[in-house]
Amino acid sequence: MPKWIEKAYNERNNAEVIVMLIPSRTDTKAFHNFIYHKAEIRFLKGRLKFGDGKQPAPFPSMLVIFRKGQNEQ
Image (cartoon, rainbow, N blue to C red; front, side, top):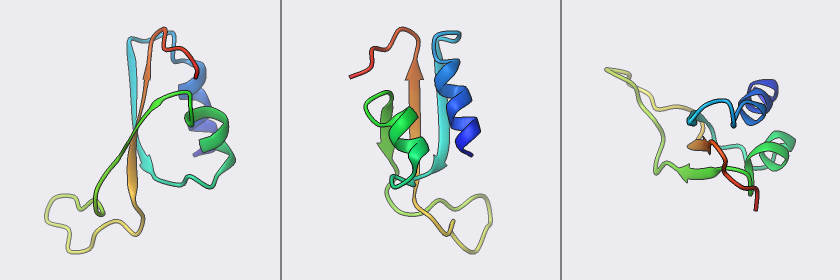
């Protein structure tokens, strides 16, 4: 996952928008190096459940949005 997050960060100016649905792990180096203050973050309430799944994901989730030309804060 860290390499995938880094790839999205590095490609952020080669696309209009990059949206990632990933586990909300704010304690990782990838979060602090490539997401925090560098992308829009939307934390999802509750845990995701897909289709007819009986159990929700075992982790919280977030949307990370990189926009072309977005300035780092």
